[in-house]
View 1 (cartoon, rainbow, N blue to C red):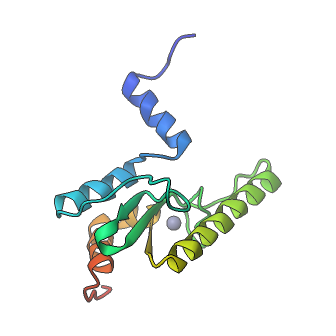
View 2 (cartoon, rainbow, N blue to C red; view 1 turned 90 degrees about the vertical axis):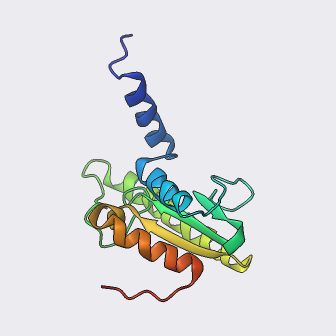
Length: 143
Ligand SMILES: [Zn+2]
């Protein structure tokens, strides 16, 4: 079979399928790293394998794709018109699982921050600035 993707493209596609190391996650990680935050990624010890764990601030961050995580009232979250039942069930399940993981993590004393794909698409710098404030608990004025 002829591989129609370049090696780079293929690994991007595969990472999307696995739902790991997507471009938006990498964007958030690079930003935090550049500011001196040190973190762990996909740590299996925590429910939901958070994308980013910052032990120093007892904070976990999930970078959620709006479709897979059923971001309500979001333009990127549209249930496909074919197999509607299958998709709505599957995506609801994802959502419930996410909510459960957040509850467990919070009960373990972690602060949980969710960064949505659409927030990063529309205005990455303000979302990332706000994120840092959420981590270090500074005042942030929503503009
Ligand atoms: Zn969204």
